[in-house]
Image (cartoon, rainbow, N blue to C red):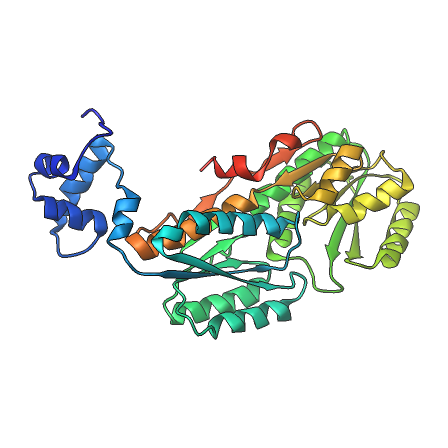
Length: 361
């Protein structure tokens, strides 16, 4: 059957041999309709390529939709500021539908800060119709998710997935695959020669995030299938403690002169990159994650060879859209929605931006 952009409800009703009211009830998922009629109407809609007019549909909804996003604190140019950008773009597009998004933030290096923000979320006086959750602290996120399940509040994960939870959806990359890609890029840039410095950049002893742990797993998985004599030199670097970091890195490079590559697993690649810049060590091939301003500067200067990015703005945008469509139109998204893993080099990063990423939906 030929698809027609001008197809009307009356046309679908005629082709399915049902009333216009039945077609309307199927589209809006309301009222009683037999399974056979639902099947026939949806079959005709698929054949003719019918896409419901969302603006017209929204006029019948007439109810506000309050969403909450629980993400880390951010400054302009940070990874999480890009996530907020996508969230706000979706909110702006859905304003006429009555969608409002409250953003609650926490310290991304403090699990207790996340738990405090989660407590604020659960005690908000307003009705909550859905939650976007940045999944940095796995166990704490699972506890929050259980509370949301008890209240029958749907939630969407961003940044990294937690498969055992009952999330409505996940929008983000395959974190393990992201780690494998990091390993592949690093070994190629090193010409498969030398040892690798693995820097765990964290706040004190907070440990890696859910995302960071999965990337590390993927990184090790790829390396296990490569050179048998490859040595990893693992160090812990601390946010905001330059003296500690310099001492640790000085010692690592002094004791392991065979280091030719380095990797970090979060957006703080610049901490190691700035050390290499100070030492004028362009012979060390550094691969990191996320397109934030200090990382980009070091990419331009040649102290970072590649950045692996995951379109945080698109994650936030799609998460808000998914929760809104569930509340407004009872449309459920696929549970796992994997986004592209982008490899950014000095030669191509300038073509990667928030607006173009949102246009790729």
